[in-house]
Length: 355
Image (cartoon, rainbow, N blue to C red; front, side):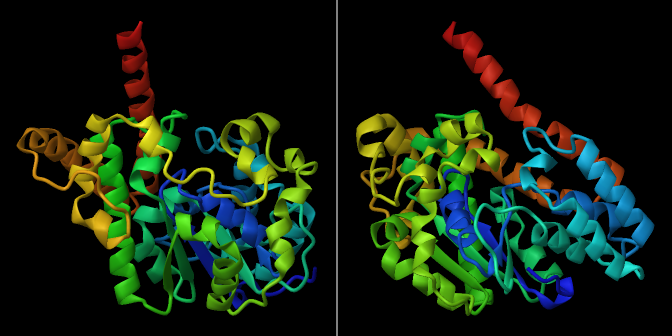
C-alpha cells in the first residue's frame, strides 16, 4: 500500500449510540480494500484542544505527541496498542510534514497507518468509528470540510437491553432514552443541513437486508462495492490479534458470525411494561418518525418528573462535553479524565443497593 499525502484522502465518521451497530459498520468498511478504519480510540478532541490555538503541530511536537500516545494511558479503557499502528510507516510518513500538519491531518495520518486484518489496496477513504463523537457532528463537519458521516440508529429499547449488559453508562431508562433522542435529533438536523454529507441508516434495515444497504453505503462514498466485505466473519481466527479475546467475547462476539437479525425486538421479551412505558414516554413522537412503533402513546403525568430530571441532566452533560472542547487543554484534559467516574459512581451505588 503506497503512502499518499494525507490531505488528499477524505475521512468519514460512523456515528451512533454505543451498542447500535457502529462496530458492525466499522467491520464491514474495515473489510473493504480501499478503506482504512481503526478500532475505537477517540483521541481527536484531546489532540484538537491541545493544538487548536497554534493551528499546526510542528514536526518535533508531532514526534513527542506520538511518543506520548504510544507510552501513556491517555484514556480510560482505551489503549493505543489497539490501533495496531505500523509505527515505522507512520514515522516515515511524518517526515513528509517537516513544515508541520494540522491536528485534523495528524489524526487522519494515525488512522491511515492503523492495522487491519484485511488486505488493502489504494486507500480512497479514511474511516473513524467513535460513538462519543455522535454529540460533535457539527464541529467535526466544520473541522473536516471534506468529511462524510454515517449515523446508525437502533430501536432505543433494544439499545437499552444491549447497554445494560455492560457498565458503559448509568443504566436509567429515562436517561438512556433521552441520550438516544438527543443523538437522533442531532443527526436529523445534520442531514437537513448537509444532505450530501450526512446519511442515516437503521440497524434493523442493515441486518435485515445487508445485500441492499451495504452497496448503497459504498455508493454514498463513491466506493466500488466488493461482496467479500460480507465475509468479514471468516477472519475470526485472526480477530484476537486485533481485538483482545476478552473484549471480543464480551462486547463483539457477533463479529465472528454472519450478519443476522437475532438482536431485533429483544426488548419485547426482556423489558418490563414499566421500563417500556418510561422509554416510550421519553422518546415520544421521534420514535414514530424514525419508524420505531411505541407500545405506549398516551400521556403519563406520573412520568413527567423523572423524564424532566434526567433529560435536564443528559442535556447539560452533553452540552458541557461539547463546550469542553473550547476550553484550554489542561482544563479539558482534567475534565475528560474525570467524566467516566460518573458512571462508575452510579454502578458502585447500584451494587451497594443490591447487596
